Length: 136
Image (cartoon, rainbow, N blue to C red; front, top):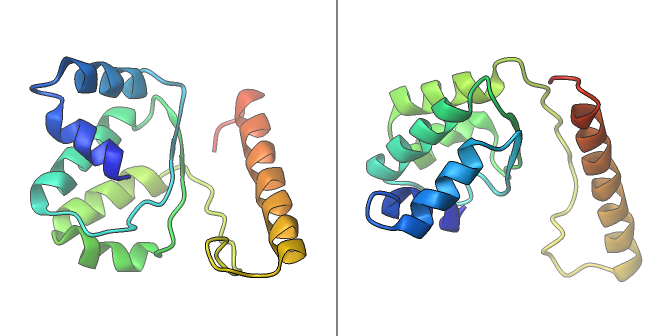
């Protein structure tokens, strides 16, 4: 998420960032991992909203977050932007809530492998579903 925000912030002055953002916007599917991992200032939240708004209705969007939507307002700092982002992300979406231990924690290897296999399986199912022409 850090690199995405950095690209959004520098796209006006960096040709490389502008090209990367353009490629994201033109993609059929965009995956954003660890959304809301860290707080954004108002400018960053506004840039992120602009990206989501451009993707809305034209790209499949897969988002992972360790925070529920009810916590996003605290991390974005602006209730209006939070509602606008959530409106575009949640509209016509399927929310899959996974409970479990974060893979970043030091846990037993067999348990970790089982969790990774399950996540890979779910991710592959979602991608196959979308690539078969279904919408979420």
